Length: 347
Image (cartoon, rainbow, N blue to C red; front, side, top):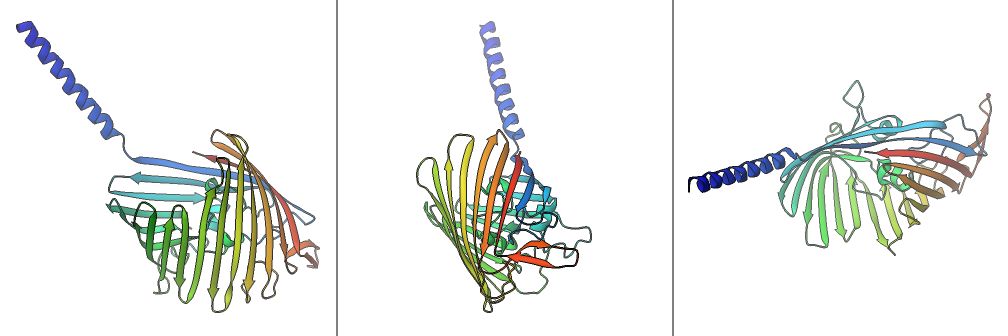
């Protein structure tokens, strides 16, 4: 009997120890992560000089000549059951362009792409405060989340980031609603005017209708996409922006075909039209428009993605420098063709 009691006590002790060890392991599995990416590229124009960064399409990023740097992106995040935060830091030319309205406060520069905390008040209601990337548009700042390496006019001339308070509400399994009050667009460090922007987003099965108003200006944006087949996806972005009779309207289609587990090919076809003297395309005249075709291949080798890309921008008026000399004599044209070879590593 004494031996049985000893074995029983030993067995119970082992069970308690195993339980405590499991609980310790679970406790040690902290929901803290560090992720990010780096990217670099080569870019060249066809039929135009390649020694100036302003001889490029009028859209953001991937505009530097020759071998060039994108950015290093480091994201620290804590994803708790109830609360969490994201600190998203960017370094390099693409990062500088992404936070172009800052530094407004810091004398040493701003490397903050996103910086926010959130509270899951319930399973269907989340509050977020801080600086977060925009909810408008199909494309984003990070090259890891875009199929095309260069960006569209619609993305480039919509907002990049907001600082404010937003509420995300799951209305049902199919519908979602986001409401936000924010600083003026791209004023991410503080509010320099005392005025506020207001935003809203209605989501349905991955399709989103977005709206923002900012000191009289407003933008309406639709972003969505459908899996036509297991290997073929079609994305769509359409937007209209108006600010005191100047602004733009445009539409972009994103057909993408996966030919294997490691290779996909995609096309972005975009029509972008200015009204008034908005000045995005670079023609110097009112009511210009541009049609841009971007063909991109995407080859993945584990965490590394190689993207060769051919882009053709064709404007209604002369918008691109085709030649110039030391005496500031410029030749201009309505179209510009360029090639980019990008490498993106995500971790």
